[in-house]
Length: 437
Image (cartoon, rainbow, N blue to C red; front, side, top):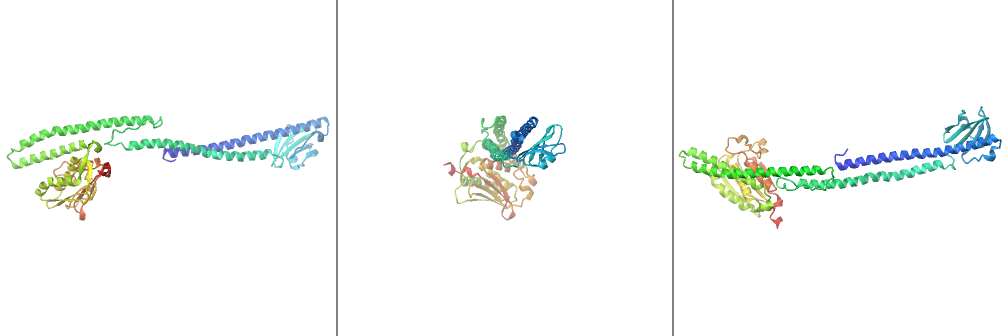
């Protein structure tokens, strides 16, 4: 059976239509032949009764017995000798006739006969169905042929009507499925329409809408919680930084400030992720990707140079303006630069590019990364062989989340010459500024 509901419905109707046509034709054939046999046997009985009455009164049978075309009447004795015969001579019928104590019907090829006992022997009445003047059998064959011609289009029409009805049903279900396909983390306000599905499937739509309501409420609580926690942690971190500044031991002070800065970056990322739950169309702003990348490079350059690495900015010649969250995109780019700084040795060259088109990328010429680690770089809390390197393990996963929030994705590949890594944020083309004008 086909896997689709439409295919199963059509196949079922086709099987039912064929079975119904076969059963109907066989039933009509049986009934019609039984009816024809009934009339033919009744004719033989009447002919036999007329012949018996004529013999009983001593009237010459030829005066009262009218033999129609294809019919024959023979009077035989116990030795099957023909005493009287009317109509066509049929010795094979006389020879095959049962000579019993009661009337019996019998067949000899296309001839149907009736043997009736008489005081002087038996009266044998026979009818040749193949005789051109006998129309009963011709009517049966003609009717069955025409009946078959009528059954064929009806049998084809039944699955066709079923297919049309099934098609209408599946189109309605497909329309609801398209609406369901639009539901995502950023469009949880969409609900399945009511009244479009069959009554049997309506409870499924209601249960799905109820589940979406609960999911939206849970996501809203989670987002609000993350934002509240991030805001509440900012003040204690600021206090810790103030308390760390007077520490006399430079090593202890540097460790404290590094931990505070790391926690501050995590808080900034949590706030950025909370902002991503809002639709870009309603809350996004116009972003110049060239200016945004240049600003990130300027901010990160002192720390990169201080670590013994270099950083360069290479913008594309064509303008690149998009709608989105500039703070989130800047955070994603800073995470990529910070990741390249922390996971490459001194002397590594870091290049930040904007364009061509809706793209932001950061690449380096550091050591090659094992092939098995490439697919796991964006996993949250995974740091691979660099587990001893300072970091929370969520930077790249946040970059990937920011890219998907802008309708795009994060591409990770090897750098030029199979050295280092290249991270590219591809922003969805649907967020073009030109498309919104």
